[in-house]
Length: 168
Image (cartoon, rainbow, N blue to C red):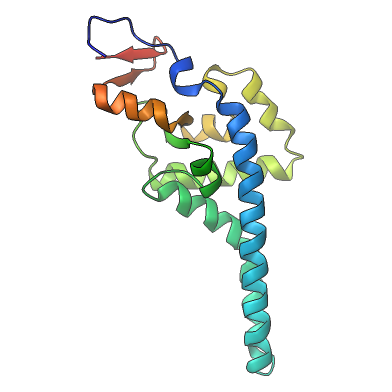
């Protein structure tokens, strides 16, 4: 893409993201359930072998989903395994860089608060530009397609927030 060509719209980055996010969430729920189940059994046997002393480690199980999300956002692909399988990545809305630690933390906390309040606040994505959820808006992040990011990176462009388009 040369600079003389017209700039692609936001749809270039976020087209089809909502459906993929829903599928990615289902995949992540299954992966988290498998991980928690595996850890529960490991801690159960640790408790048996330590004559009950290891059962206290089970108190750490509720933080597993939280750590799963924060560490996934801070990893190289900046996405949970479910998002990776669906071809998505999480980026800063301002310049499409990887999320900072604070942004990953805010996003994860806001996501779980949203889920704790029935999850209805996720509907906001139907009405926002770039289909951003409440936790995306609060943390300054956006979920985009990986293939679009690869094209954007090869063209050495940046996202201009004011116009909602790309700028050289």
